[in-house]
Image (cartoon, rainbow, N blue to C red; front, side, top):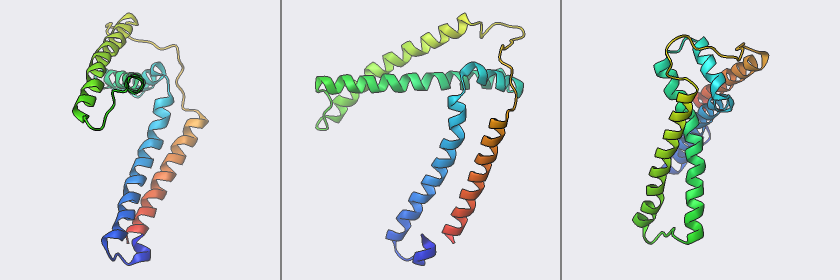
Length: 164
């Protein structure tokens, strides 16, 4: 934007800040999508093949399973509050209480269920863990990596041109 405006005025800086945020957010979202779409067992096998330590891999896997469940629970709580007419902008602290108290109990329950499920699957067992999934770097993976690198480099240079 500065390329067209000669950088005069604050009103011209707002689109530049927006572009700055959008470019970074786009790169993050596009690089996270393949990870989110991968099943947790396969992702654990990939991390094991990449020799990522279990103390790093396990929390990442738990987070990736925890947040989608919490997000759906959050939307259910909001729908329930809307149905009962308890969401009010006049009393924001009461509304936050109605939202966060059930959310804390629900999150605690979800965390316990995920921990129990992973214990049943033997996640904390000592010894060698195997996977029934064969992990290979396929053509699709190669295409995704190439496209992500090209997009990142392209957005980087586009930002450099826009900021001059």
